[in-house]
Image (cartoon, rainbow, N blue to C red; front, side):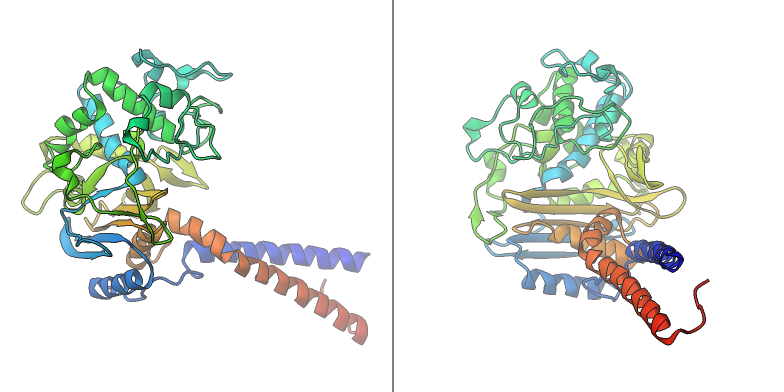
Length: 430
């Protein structure tokens, strides 16, 4: 029995050591095979082009940013040609741009970040819950810490006439994922956990409309897109822009229809690579001396967007409408947002390094995760570290390695025990 206890203790200690090594390996990319091991832009672009040929992407546009300006652009399509002015629907990357619009409403004095959101709303109110709804604030909605448990995930509607009103969608979204209730309500105590909520941004959409007196798209156009010269960006595509809209694809390479959304703020932004390059640059001082925010958004507002508002395992993961991918230096993080839809397949990503002015923008249709993988590989090659989304992808892919390590530990200990028993050698484990 004593021998068994000793071997069990040794197995436990070795397993803990292996777990530490494994997690350290995940964080440093030991188990990751990037699309290229070369760090220069030309090699990276060549690897991207090879990857897009090997994997299906119905439409693809990429920009590499260097010192705040465009260094390289790449385009690919299976249908009509794609260029920097082709319009893509960007799924949840919409939240990043929406957050800037919400913060503009703060700058205009129409709302306060820490006032209970129900105080601003007349058309719809958060339903009663066992928790204090007054703790649901704009800040917490932007940072996904408001306690909402909707899990949305909007699929949209193939028929434009099926679109719900904002109020009806907030009560029960008809285009919710099957795994989601579709109901926007407080299900956990606010500010006690990070819970990604598409419904929270639909609630912010209603807030913008109520406090501005404009439709959401009108407010974003007049207060964000036009002032920042984002001429092809909109949450609702009109006839004048429709000819530049790229086609949609499913993951099985078949063509897909355009989907329409009530949840504009959360998932329905239509924009171009060119406009997102302009959006990227508002976070930086331009080479021509243009200030941060281009005198349209206050620099302190843009800084607040990327300040950590929730942390996991000691690492900040989310700001106000921004994903925080990797801490770098001077208290800054590589930040941005990704967008993903499975019906139709859309994947988009933007990464911004506010210290160097470098970054990457990827827009694509027809592949569920290609843009995220490419953007995360760019971060990995630039920093030698794994960003938040790449880490989550590697955890699933690397579990086989973790299990193999544990099995090896077990087999070695069993082998040592049998060898000692057979040979009756002196004790080697004290």
